[in-house]
Length: 347
Image (cartoon, rainbow, N blue to C red; front, side, top):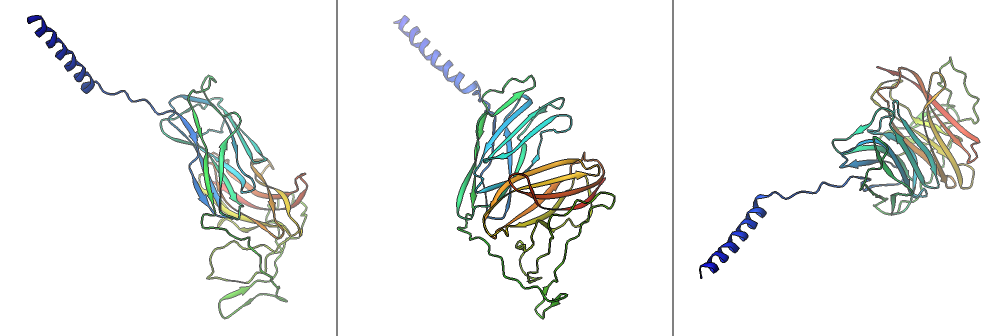
C-alpha cells in the first residue's frame, strides 16, 4: 500500500513538472525566412507604374545579387530603373537591356557591402502600360536568382515572390484616336470660350552653344490641336513627325537629390504598325552618358507613345551642365528621330 502511494505520488510530480515546463519555458519562435519580391499593383493604359523590388528578413552581410525577371512586353513597356539601397559608387551594377520580355540585374560589392537591419528596396522598375484591355501581367523570377554573402556564398532559404499588376481594372480602354486638326493660316487666335489655337511652331535646339549640335533627321512641328485651359491634364496627342518633349522641367537648374519631371511624345505616322527602340540618356558636358535607359515597343498605326519621366538626381552627381536626349531608332539601331534639352545641376 505504501509503495503504491509513493508510485502515485511520483506520477503526480512528473505531470506537474511537465506542466510547469510548458507554461514557464518560452516558445522558441522561428525567424522569418529571407525573401525578395514584388507587391501587387494596378494601373491603366498610358500610365507609368513604379514597381519596387523589396528584400525582407536578411541578417547576412550581402556582397552579391543576381536577379532575372520575366514579363509580357505586349502589356508592359520597360522604360528604366532607379537604384535603391544597392550602392553604385565604387561597386558594379550591370543591367542587360530587355530582350523578349526579360530583365537581368547583376551587382557585386567591391567595398560597399550591404548590411540590412530592416526591409529594403533593391531597385524600382519603371514600366509604361500599353495593354488596352482589362487583364493581368505577372513579374516573375526566371533562370538563376541568387543573393550572396560577403564571401560570395549563396544565402540559403531565400524565396523569390512574383508580383501581379492588374491592368485597366475599370474595363476595356479603346485606343486614343487623334483629332483631325487644321492649322490657322497665320498666327494664333483666342476664342470667346477661352480656347486657343496656336500657330505652327518649329522646335529649335536648346543645346548649349559651346557644344556641336547634331544634324537633325526630321523637321519637328508642334501640334496645332485646339484645346481649352480648363480641360483635364490628358496627354496631348502629337501630330509631329518625330519625338519631342511636350513638358519640360519648370526650371533649367536643379539641385542634387531632387527629382526632375518632364515628358515626351512620339507618334507612329508610317501608316502601319511600327516597332521602335526608345533610348533615353543623361549626358554630361564632356559628352559622356551618365545614365541610359532603353526599351522596345510596337506602336499600332497612328498610335502615340507618351512617357512621363521622374528622374531622381543623385546627390553624388557632379555639378555642371547636362542634357537629356531621347532617340527613336529602328530595331537595327537606325536613327528615326531625336530631341533633347539642357539643364544645370547645382548644390
